[in-house]
Length: 280
Image (cartoon, rainbow, N blue to C red):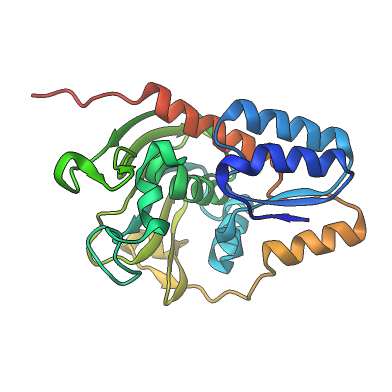
């Protein structure tokens, strides 16, 4: 079964599916908070069924190739990373008029179930970073920002109080330090994910936009002269195909509920510990 219900319904509907003995592919995020996500992950593990989460950017072939490069040791020890998810629908009508369409307005309102850009696309760029780096987040600090978008920051029934931009500093379990950020105010970027990983032997960059995806690397002798080369990669199967294969084989596959719960723990931590920047 594929669960494509709204975020707030993922917990109740998925738990019912598991109790009914169904294999489940759930849309991201797994839940709206870590408590629910952890309960879902535990129930999934106990069920013996195939359970996965549709983190769609796992379908990006350069991201899969980047992870292999890291795990193969081609970059050496990862020291620094930069991950960004840039959207511009608050300053562009390329996807429609957000001031008049509910499909956008609810994403700006906490009472309509939104956790802002952090919950909407933050989970994507967080997974993008930790998957490629092959390491989970160990420590993090964050800043969330809500910008004024209309008189009183309200349009009709929608209070526009969900975060529009988030900034996170993080250290991974492998010791790498870096930044993860996302915004809906990135003029000139319709929907761009970008990741840079820097190791003590080499570096790579993955870029994904509506026009396509690329992987570049600077490694070996090229590192001395900072020469970057494009790497061609083969297509990969989608999450839906992996899920179907896993069900046929009766074997679990990733991204699973346990991983998604870990991501939700980081997102919850970002909200709970978000602080104001110190004025100079």
